[in-house]
Image (tube, rainbow, N blue to C red):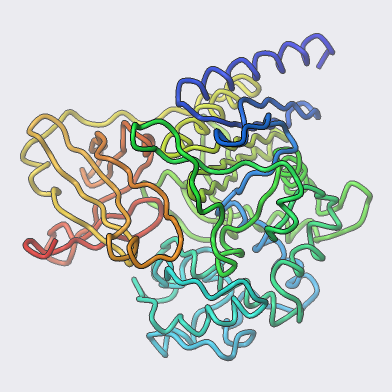
Length: 468
């Protein structure tokens, strides 16, 4: 690419990022693109509306569940060294593990956790402190976590499962989770803007999350990060520059830029081969090892996103085109659609790939009547409603969870339009609001009645009428 074309692309990216962030009322955005062997960055706005500092490619954002790609890759390094076996029971490495189902506890493998087929529910909202024993204490609480299915039966996204993998890393290496990931990945890859500890982050420029305030405008989210318990599934603070370096490693052959081999090429690329299929999920068509796998406009992508109380990240790689894009935003609920718009623009602008949502069917009052109601998991409730003209979906943290939490939790998602998709009529897409573009499906029991919702890879069971 010529210098003129590079400058033009950078200007076009910057213009689109600024326009999109403004449309979605996002205080700060940081975007990075790897294309044609070059890095391009664009940033907009400020780290915080209360203490505004300019955002750039080195500003730290919390990337939430994109942290899972680090946890998984660190474990693959242990696999390469013969210290962990993907098909081994987790109890080989965490012998203290006790779960609600003893048979399942003995059967769940490391791979089951890595591709979210363990049968474990999403998570437990607990704070086990900020000490080095946080993950060990979390494992002691797992007997209280419900199961949503048998190990290996189906995919269901589990934060708890990845936190448990963090304990595997600790027990095998003898290090804390953060120290293990630093020594196995962050330091060898030269990721100088990637941290788990608040004390390390606070000396650098970092973004804070924002949620809707009383007047609807962004207000600072006072709980900046998750608890230390959730580090393996969502605790990394990093920058667009470091995330692109991370992406380049995964697009490569397992070598660092200095020539050190971190992973055999075969093991690295095995992470992007499908291990389980997903149905009607915005997360993708299937899971590899941690990565979401998706077909988008004729190319195969590997992806992972994340969110932490008003901060959102989206990372998409196209290995066959040596391409990657990361978008990070610091306001909810519009951070998700804002990031998605940037990612889609980059795919089309740099690769000519058009990634479009499927078109929903026209409103059907009879069908709407069969799906309205409340659906819940351990922490959240989804409410499907109709006004006779459209169907809406709302997502809310359970009041008892919000009230008992010792930290501020993310804002709820207000009712927004959704539509059923062609096919068997059980798949849907949210078409408006902060969840726009999110796909899922209604599950049925053996009698054929609607029994639950699968959204974002998580299972929500229908609440019996009169129990909501």
